[in-house]
Image 1 (spheres, one colour):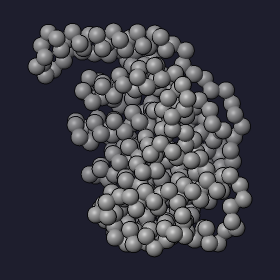
Image 2 (tube, one colour; image 1 turned 90 degrees about the vertical axis):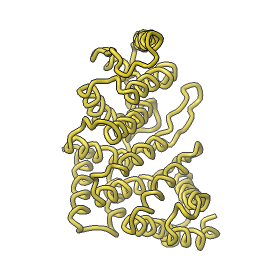
Image 3 (cartoon, one colour; image 1 turned 60 degrees about the vertical axis):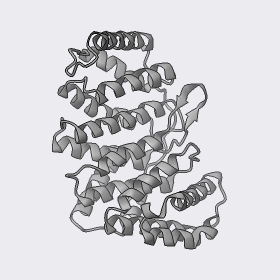
Image 4 (tube, helix red, strand yellow; image 1 turned 180 degrees about the horizontal axis):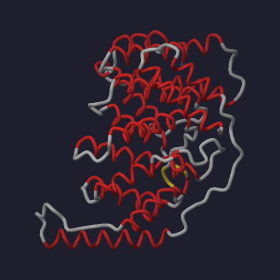
Length: 334
């Protein structure tokens, strides 16, 4: 068993313990302990898509086909349109392309339109969900120094958030077991991702932590999801943020705080856990030696920014106990 496989099993076991009511206060520390046992990996070659021009050509052809259908009958409700499985695979692979014309304005825009306008068959939606939530997509090069693997991971999560919305708000296409597996994968990804880059030069957006917030927001809205599972995902997000030593400078912290605070307003269980986590973060600063490395200092300022983002929210959008605690400690963390 690899170290990664062991970590996956540990997270699945932690989720079950939360469901059984066996852990609560110690959940974050247990996650942190498991995460710190995963050593960073050396850089390896990132295999990138090579058929970007072909994929872009197919996207343009499908888009033109839809335009012709709309022109013929603007009020049409049931579009006679089908994307082949082969083309869907080729286009989806471009989510890993560092070049934004193939990844962002190409594959992402196209797949977003396909999902939101109900233009994919249920079996294609299921395939897309399973493919994007696979280990090969979500955890590709995740333990390595910054490299182009971030695009595959981050944009997989972004499309997954759209698929989660479609499954919740439209006709469901995922089984309970598939949703269960998806939550495990998103939670582990949120805990493991360490690449906080937002907009990257000529390659455009990576924005992984905003995409995490979007996917988590959809999971938190799932009506059938029990509180223990929502708590587990919340804990994974906070545990990952606790370990992050990259700066988040493109609004990602605000998005995470917004999503987590909204959940905290739903029930005292979430509010109590979020407050406990914030207190533990402050305890870290009191009990640990002062930061001496860039990574440690960045973790300090990430947490400080998290507190400040809570202050910026409308007080009615945050549980009062959290608002009161953050205001009491804001000078200490500034």
